[in-house]
Image (cartoon, rainbow, N blue to C red):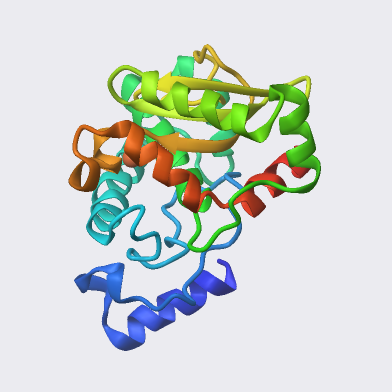
Length: 240
Ligand SMILES: [Fe+2]
């Protein structure tokens, strides 16, 4: 258990807050950097529900994290029990790499859990507006410019029919690629059209934006760029 989780648990224990929602937790309750690894459990949100306002409203964040994402994690645990996945030893990423061998429940909820854990970390209040360093150079090289990259990624999210995700992916040959996946699929999965390590993910399910943006998904995406945590994405790129 991490120190952060320890302190969070003791904070909840001593204040009796466990049953009344996380929106009252202070901003020092941060998650460890996202590593996926064997993380089959839902990690604390790395900021308050209201931290991303006005881009994403507090109610959307609270429902998204504590209802939708929490349900994926719970259902993933059920599927792991039913299908005898040893979550103490198996890495979540390895499960996703061989997802075609498992049930639809495992695919939907394993993806749902992984994607949301990544998504929370991909955002930050008061974030830098563009990448720097090696990632900035790689984006320029791959897409021509940061603005072209943003347009292509935005289009991937806008044009995903129904529910799904837009991705910036680092492929096996260390190239950057943009794509999208349906439902809760992701580029780690062996069944995915786009494959690689997801560096940046955007949730374009209506549950991610409907309360504030209703049917205007393009407005949600355009505003979302203002809360992308480029430091986190850069770190993932450099860790390759
Ligand atoms: Fe979502």
